[in-house]
Image 1: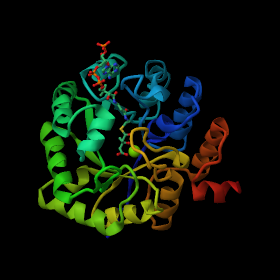
Image 2: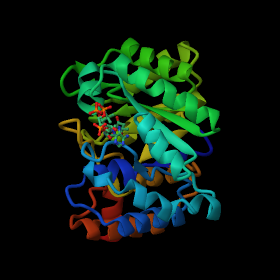
Image 3: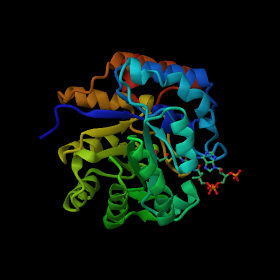
Length: 302
Ligand code: HMG
Ligand code: MG
């Protein structure tokens, strides 16, 4: 059966904005995060503490995070931030972050492109990050990119993905996010990966899914994941995003498209779709381009 409630992990302010050509002013980003919280999103990935030269769009993390961090007290909003290494962790903890995410790769090509490391060197880089974060009672998410296909290597074998998932869980991650970074997954493949993880005793409640909509399969893939017991789904308001270090990556699953489907299925998300759509229309105006989300277009008559 399907779950009664799905937790949406909103990534628009991070995965979305990291890939926009336009530089969004810090105050506009803060307003975006506040509006997302106001629309009922309980988990909003705020920014990344990565090298500013690697992701210039998020180079203002030190200025942005203090503008939004009160939301965790005001509305209980969880505000995870991306952290690749101990330097990033120091920066995040200094500003009071209590939720971090490390980001591994299932493939060597993307590990090199995104982290300048082999897969195992990247895991070794994350180990002290996760250990120190857990020692401070921070919540740790482990992203895993290229779980289905890789732009350089093609289809990614399920056991290769399972191995890195296992390593991230053994390291102490509280949850994983299975990334279809370039959007090539199809529902049968999603089912095979989730079944394999289940057979390795990786608990399904600790798994989230992160789909990109390149081939229009993100919602079908999400439904397949829900049927396999997943209850955490990543999505990006208005369908913003992609990934700067993966050619052919287009936008994430749009949060509005996800909420439309889940509402129709009678699954609660806590999200007010009208407020969220208004937020994405506003953000599209800031970026000077229409939202790619079908639901945003339908509801706003764009
Ligand atoms: P590197 O060049 O190997 O870095 O990059 P290094 O460790 O050799 O350090 C070089 C210099 O950078 C040093 O300075 C460090 O202090 C500094 P120096 O001593 O030479 O003056 N440095 C930093 N400065 C600020 N903040 C830091 C930091 N770390 C080092 N955190 C590194 C390695 C990991 C830093 C780099 O590759 C990087 O920043 N990568 C991030 C790339 C990224 O953010 N990608 C997008 C997110 S992943 C994604 O979008 C996928 C996802 O959505 C899921 C999916 O769809 O699959 C999550
Ligand atoms: Mg992504």
